[in-house]
Length: 351
Image (cartoon, rainbow, N blue to C red; front, top):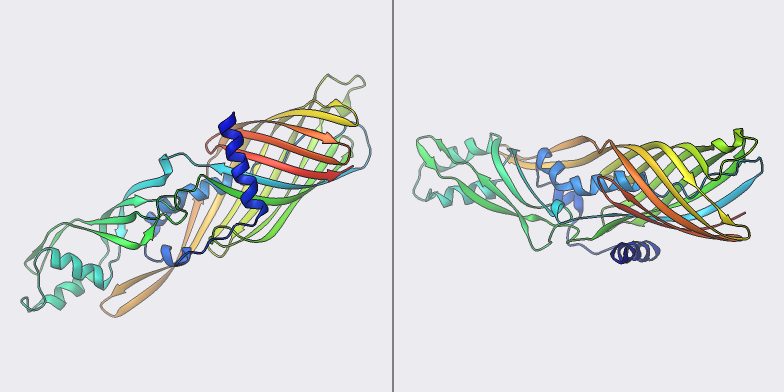
């Protein structure tokens, strides 16, 4: 539990201070060096984190079972935690090589342009084709001092035997440098209760998240308290809810997520109260990665617009949390157990 609390603090502080970092190159420049299949593997940890974060922090307690207007504005800080697993990846897929990479591969086989008269023809034949290669190296959250390695399988071209050769993409490394968690901020308005029902709306825009791009968040949800229908209320509040959110990061990442589930809470106290809560949810997410892939051909440098459609986790998750209500001020903390473990801290004001 202490370790979890420490990680949640690491979430809240970066969000409050509006994280930006100074990187020698942008994420778009990094991705432009990689073909689409490898880009998906490279960016997958943050895509999964975006999906989990979007489906977190919505719920802090059921709306009142009686009619009456209540409103609360909350700052929601959500953070998805990373294990060591996603920091590296291996992948076999197609790639188009650059002129410099082909020169390096040919030199590795002792094919010298000053000796081999057909050097340019051999080189152009390699440049004109896609090659199945092995990628091995850091993901986007890996070590910034490690570079992506590419293993060329070897070939026979114009009677010249070209040996297998491994080279590094020095422009592709762990962009986020072993980051422990990825924060996701939002401002949320909760309003209720009409026939035991409350609605929530989220919006946030303006921070450059670790130079991945400017965050643009919006979303909405609805939740209903079953106790509205009972003359004699049961000891705890129980209800169902649905939430949807869109989360865009710069021009590269566009993400949507939704969840529905069963939620319970129990308010203990009046003016100052403690409210434990829990939720069992089914979550879905979808992401798009848009970037420009640059490669060489015998006719010169080409640029291809790539759009990757990624279906995130479809999973059941358990969320546990509690809130402390002090008249007009409220703070809450919860933790979600699922495919990507996610913690939330919220600070709210309302009546």
